[in-house]
Image (cartoon, rainbow, N blue to C red; front, top):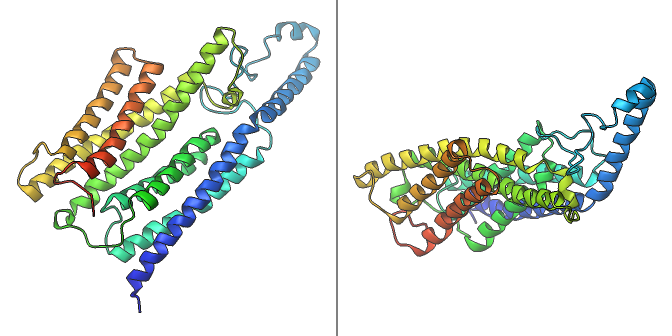
Length: 346
């Protein structure tokens, strides 16, 4: 007879797979929403023009002459964006049934995901981030929850394809690449600092994941805007539902600033934990070095953008490079470099 903890561990694995499947469905719904964006754009623009025509008719021909600029709420003439700098749609963007389905399914997936993570924690009798599998699944949960909570305040459904796609990829990587049965922690991890150090690292990494998606979107939008400025055809019309490159950059910068503070705390807490566990604050372990490298990259990103005017694509690439360093630190360093922090085989 399996014990209760063993049953919970099995349920956790099952529900993690169910969450991955639900996220995949949400990803398809968000992608379908973007694919149908041309129809949505036509509906939105026709509504704007109809509304404007009524306004012009009501104020008379004299006012109509001065209103030929199409008003402050119309899409910009240069790039046709339907979202302003505050990431608010200039008008309700049609029905967007696929996007609504994506959000609903994503909430269901997140609920299943939370159950899977919590049941894993109960089965293990500890916090669920003691190995690569747990770190990745918990991080994916935080990414999804942050995105869904922000959706309650801002209509960021345009990011659904990218954020939920990353969450799905993270869960697939965890379940297929790093499957780890429920087990006790190695002695070095049996410390209250695990909760403090790793929880902040999970949250910071999750925020960096969101800014990675924003930076990738920024590069696509910047390329589209430059093509339009050069008089070339718009091959990525779905990006009209996405804010301007500058708005995406500013949003990513603010989130990166918060995540950088968390990563700084992660680095400091790790040093204190190392002193308690191994009798030294810093030992040039590979994991320690790469954690510092990540800190340097994002410090350079924030400094360059704030004081050196590194905006636009250069800023986006620095943010992306920083996130790729995080991925390298989590995968290659953990698996292929021997050290005190190695999670290989755990």
